[in-house]
Image (cartoon, rainbow, N blue to C red; front, top):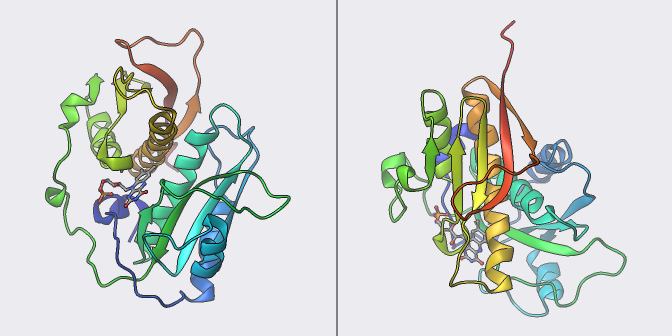
Length: 256
Ligand SMILES: Cc1cc2nc3c(=O)[nH]c(=O)nc-3n(C[C@H](O)[C@H](O)[C@H](O)COP(=O)(O)O)c2cc1C
């Protein structure tokens, strides 16, 4: 399965077979993540892959969702670090799905008892084998806003197709806070300016959601022959009252 096929197949899976994955698979994930170019490459980040026992130590208890492995994402805590973490986590989710491995984001877990001398904990994703199936087609996606409710602008092909795969990105509690303004060469990305839910924790999760959507956008663009460079334009392009996050510059790949 390719990463873009994994976008269709992926869903959050919450029951796991408690058997460790083969070391070669874990090594493959480590290599894949180590090769990523994150949206803001100036931010220092890294990751750990922990078994359940170490995760219990880190969160100082037993996580509600128990899986054989947890991808822990760490980063300097500065502007845009959450977008990066969302991007890294979702790229891992797509890579694991493409290899037949089930995943579930675990945004609610907090590191209460972290190891010394490491970058700060940002978030994590549980993964392992499961008896639960992946999706077999996009028609199984339910309980989601329509694409036309989140993406506006010039949706000529292939931008519409790119946006359809981007729209399938997961979000914390399925709140779907990401909005898009599409023009010929750039897709501007916004976070919903939620006037009711102003709690810091929601903002935290929704910045991760933006990063997850950026991962889908990059994979989707590649499928249609485009490379994406993420930029932060100044002055920021306004869109209603939403909070500007980044712009994805679509660059046509040369065909040899
Ligand atoms: C940043 C982020 C954090 C999440 N945190 C949790 C979590 O703590 N627990 C959980 O069960 N699901 C979590 N999820 C999964 C969402 O609930 C799920 O993606 C959403 O309901 C859509 O369902 P789907 O992933 O099956 O498409 C999280 C998803 C994201 C993107």
